[in-house]
Length: 500
Image (cartoon, rainbow, N blue to C red; front, side, top):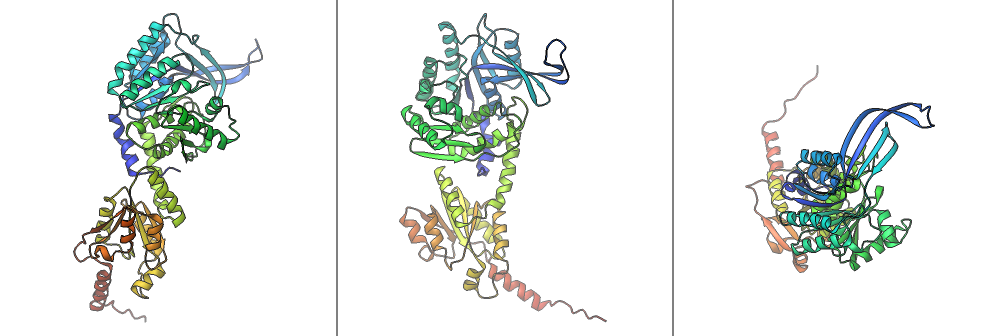
């Protein structure tokens, strides 16, 4: 399940518009004929498909470009095409999405085309038209010049290698070296049996089968296979590897660390194109400086959208925003965490470089002072955790008539606040054991305390954290509110109603 955040939501909503991406790779045209089958041919024992709909879609590297454009990024696409009718059709489809097409025409070679014939959701046949994977030195030079000319104005590069001849090792290495020189992240979607040609890339993003072929390890032993992937990350000089695991999600591999993002479980209609969607999201995240631990769950969410569609259909920004918004709304309940679950959540936040803020209190009858305190506390870091005194803890502190509002309701109200990222109930009189377990970067209390009287202040300072005291709002306090309410009732008692 994705740990959705307001930051990711804002990024998807607008941030990607300023992140141009260059896609270089094997460009294809996906063609579809949809029809109905109600008889067998009298000429041969094959079904007769009565065509009712025809459709063309950019495929291969062009589908990666379509995903990026759909997410809101400016895109330049570089590859080979045949200078034929399919080439013209591909250019037209790309232009409709605002994609800058720089396809080198190869005379005498057809544009790679995959024609699928379907009845309902059943694919009856696929017909592939493609040239042998061989191009001239002049053609490769033209492709490289197109790519290098676009490089100075992009924020990320994707190499989409379908093993159709566009990306031999010398081309990959030239592009990787140029991207490195400009400090531009370059991600590779591989189909080659060896990953050696991608040495020095920022990341390689294979699926399980592709990683198995490259390492010689069986997908049946996932632990061993991912370990071999980590060894490749080190030996090839990559920053990371993102391995798509199908229904199990995505594994982000570093040489000495590993992160697993579970899949967003959806009804699967068609998995074609899901890998293109994943690498598009990861590339944009890398361009924005988002950690892969945050980006991988987002890519899972996007893949969950596209596999619910028939055919090769790219993600749209509005679809991802909708899915992310639903996830964020669902996480309101997920903010109420037990200490063990909270420790896991904190570890994930820290792996993304986020600073943890902690505050605590009874929060009985929430008022404007509480709201301002929490809003200011959230601004002191990236994640705000609220430690909430349990009902028994409040009674020990405030007396037998408190709390007015039970701990379940208090926790639920706090979890509904946008400034709060997690709520944890503690039963001790003080939050010190919880503070020592969480080790927050910032400890926040109201300015009615001094730093020396804040519980946990000494411990937080000892591990390099800091204490922040937030100014109070006038005379706002729960105790005063209760006293005012009692006084109001005593001055204006409820009238007695006598029954006849």
